[in-house]
Amino acid sequence: MSTERFAQAALVVLVVGLALHNAVMAQLWELGLRGGALDAVAAWKEGLLLVALVAVAWKVRRLPGARGVDALAAAYTAVVLVYWLVPQDWLGGDATTRGELLALRHHLLPVAGYALGRLTGTWWERRGSVGALLALVAAGVAVVGLADLALIELQAWRQSGVPGWYREQLGLDYEGLSGLPENWVYNTGDEENPIRRLVATFLSPLASAYAFLVGLVFVVSRPFRWWWVALGLVLYAGLLYTHTRAAFGALAVGLVILAAAQRRLAPALVAVASVVVAVGFLVAYPTLGPSTTYTQEELEFLRQNANPEPVPGGEQAPLPEVSSDPFSPSEPSIASHWSHLRDGVRAVVRHPQGYGLGNAGVVAKRTRVEIKAGESTYTELGVDTGVVGMAAFVLWSLALLVALLRREAWVGAAFAAVLLLGLQTDVIGVHWLAVAVWAVAGIAISPRPAPVTVPE
Image (cartoon, rainbow, N blue to C red; front, side, top):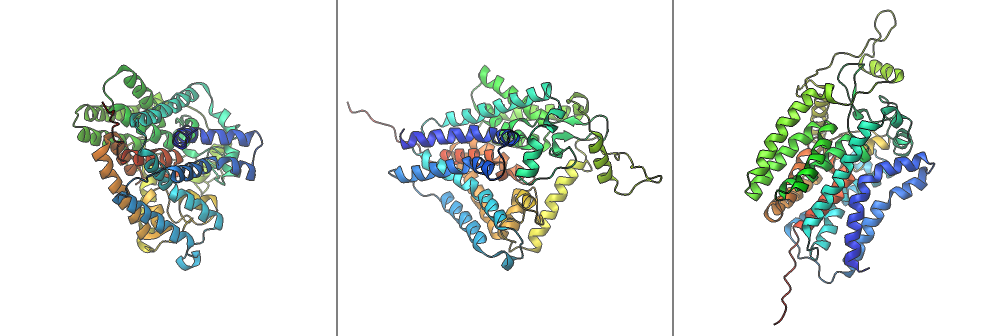
């Protein structure tokens, strides 16, 4: 196999494999592969990405011409490496060595994906096939997720290897849902009627929603064909059942940007229709969504967490009333996201030099250190790499976005939606996004191969 074919195959394997990664790792944990052995297996993605990068860089005869975007990517990388090398006690951080390594991987994964795309983009002629690959993989995830909601009870997930994999392998303790992430269920405020959300092979409603969003932007960018419509309906159905409001908003923004970049009205009309349908679906979700039940232990934990002080008589009070309006600022999920974003901004403002790698987000939670900022991509970068690192990432992202909108409209629109999601969510912590989206971005801004002229 030639080097270029290997790199193409590696990217395909990464796009497909990262969509399946979490489900497969949890299954391997259940089968008894645990600890360091499972960590080694889970590192397949970093290993394959590294081998592909080295192979292409070694064999490619002519590196793509350097661009300003590449310089900004290099500057961001340099800042991350400097913060990795600076001792934690100089900055006031308390991350562990393992936490620093996990954070280094986290922050540089999109750079690695982008670099692979740039190195392969000079000879990848069928760029549309990359978008189709992302959309088809996302659609496959949607089908699995919808089938799960229809056919599999939540109890089966409680008894699976997923809780143990999260708790013992990743160090993520989730107490409110028998070891499953609490966001697997939409809390309606009714103890008897919690509603499930689609999690699929990502084992996350958020990661699933973001993959569907990217696939939908590509599908809407295509000329009208029945197969694109069918694929789009599958993706949109999956997106609805993730009950991820930020993704609905980001999708609409991405489609409006797509309409402007392509000078087409259709994407804007789809954006409006998407918002209307999403609003109606969210309002009706307590009656339309697949209902489940809490176990007695889960109810006791949720009640205690909501009402730490016992009521007179020694009995625990029931769950408090929560807003049933999915768009109310006081709705628990919305309020939590705003609170995390506000606290993260304050942490960056108070400590603009940063604390060093490993002091923010899931990495800090996994390594049992104080989480100084969480959820937002930008505040986590600000805590780990200071204002300088956060600014370097933002400048690189904006420059890349401008270049994409000039060269490949659908990639630019999808990238803009992902950057918008980054305000609320750690998007580069979703490895599928960090590798697939940034790799496609690298491919998209690379120069087209010169046409081959056949002598007469």
